[in-house]
Image (tube, rainbow, N blue to C red; front, side, top):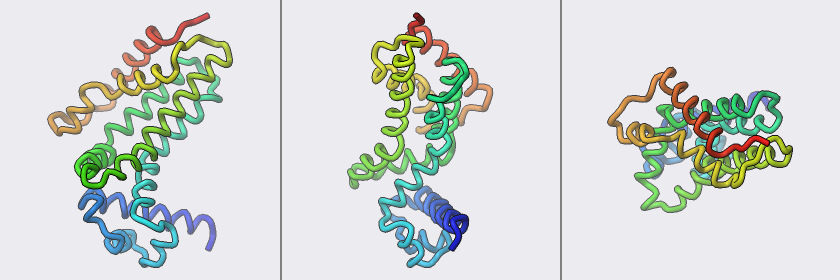
Length: 203
């Protein structure tokens, strides 16, 4: 089997699992249902993923691929810090306000009380990764002696919190629509401007 075919089959399984999780929830989505949704045989499904937990981690990682890559590329960016932060912020905002990400967030919150490991699994698969990547980027700015950031850990947390804002919670509750592109762009620009003023000190 060629690598391309392997990747296609794996992606088909991940997409099938995403649909099943969003439609039925994690607990009610059996490996049989996911195999049918892919569609692949159950043997093929287990060849790629040995458990439903592993599948959920893959689903979360797949949703976040663009964000992971954007933050990872930040350390090699030749653009200004402000423009790099805007790229990261835009990728983050596009992710958290997507239908799939909002739906996945809701189902994990609904089920993690009965299945506590789900919360840790999801946190380790995405939020922890992004936070660590962002801290690494901010620390690299200090190391390169371009600017001073007093507390990269706190700064990364504040940056992510500002990007979520009040309207992310409102979208999760379904009391407002997902913001259009222009509103997201304006939000990103305001957050980056405030962040630059409050956390990044030029030499």
